[in-house]
Length: 154
Image 1 (tube, rainbow, N blue to C red):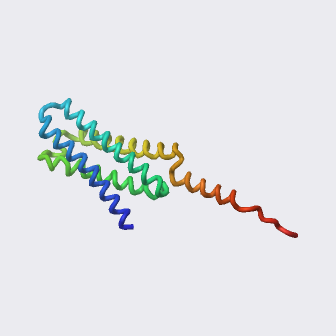
Image 2 (cartoon, helix red, strand yellow):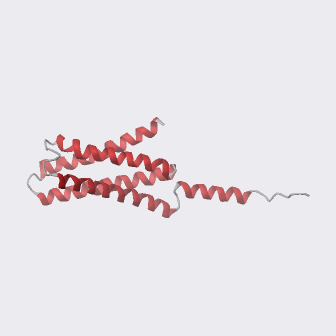
């Protein structure tokens, strides 16, 4: 059980670090250039989606969907809160400086990138037939095929 929470914590930290690195690149590399800052933000969301796709692929092989989906929802919620509330403070910026519309847009983009990443990872895993449920069904079919038919005497 402690390994499960360690994995969740490491994933939250990794997503937060991706955001901090993107914010630092924007802060020191593209201070006044909104176009470049937008591209860096887009790349950050793509990296977050890619990380979550890989994690969904790995977790989907090892555990049932109900087990890892709750962990993934927790990871996305905590990482999003850290990204939106703590991340701007690290680069001396107010999280609410651009108004509510920008703040809500960031929430939407984060949820879209995270959801797309998890969905792509799990769909690829399922299409390959390597998810936990497919593995269980394969084992069930093998066990049923291996048993000889029982003769019943009357």
